[in-house]
Image (tube, rainbow, N blue to C red):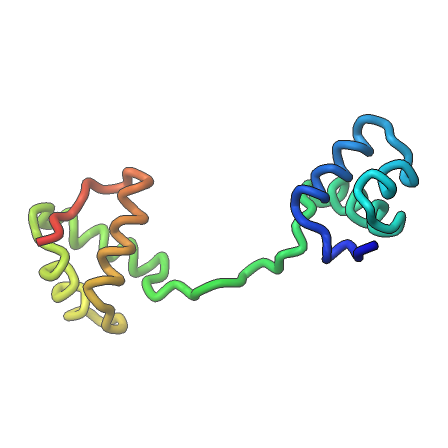
Length: 124
């Protein structure tokens, strides 16, 4: 019988749904194959927080271009929408912020373009 942190997202979902459908703590623990305390803690976390994930927040790669840099990049793109990514990178690096690579600018622009903030920048 695993602890609450050992359970998969599927098992956590099973616990939440079983409890929502009226199953007792013992029945739910038997269904999923975990301890009763794990069922109680996962269900309480779902009730209080609305989620069951045990993954810590703020993990992953830190952003090289922060929000202020994105706004600056947006202004640069609006000045000349037909420039290439290499030209945009050179223009961005000429400013006061830290230097970034063409790949970083391209990746940031791609993430932006998925949200339809600004039209695509040519890649060549």
